Image (cartoon, rainbow, N blue to C red; front, top):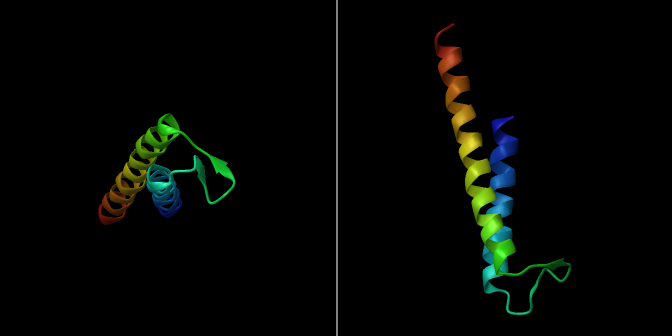
Length: 66
């Protein structure tokens, strides 16, 4: 499960980066974004990536104590 969080976090951050550099208001021609969307994607990407890395640490700790 931590891998899924990491992948979604990376995807959210990539969409945010594309949104910041896209001047047309659309990403990849089908995602309409504005600056609020871009910042939302940044925050969600960081939170989801953090969840992926934190759950990976917990998994390692619980396996090490067995």
